[in-house]
Length: 102
Image 1 (cartoon, rainbow, N blue to C red):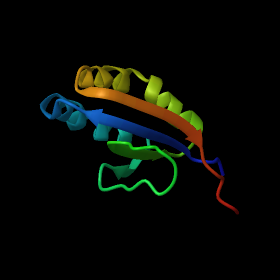
Image 2 (cartoon, helix red, strand yellow):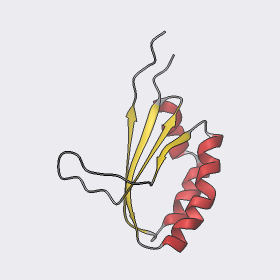
Image 3 (cartoon, helix red, strand yellow):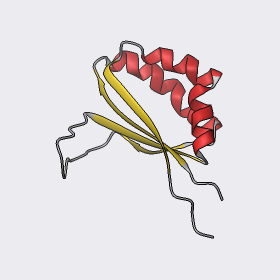
Image 4 (cartoon, helix red, strand yellow):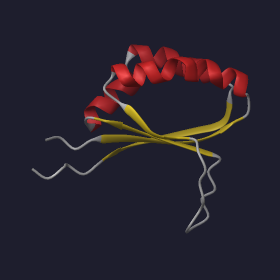
């Protein structure tokens, strides 16, 4: 079984009205690509270090390659444009998870 791929995002939304346009489209694209949201906003607390994210999202995909294909795909490329100007910053990393034991 392939290890899952995770997209980890930190952002600061400055224009919620504009960002809502992005959020109206993004979940369907994530689901169509086999992904799911594990974290989308919600409360957070820094337990160690100096990282102070405003908002965090974590998405899981069946594999690293699936997540990368989602990000690079035509559908999400168009959707990303909907959040242009809606955030002060939007940082996203793709990481490979641990393969489940058989």
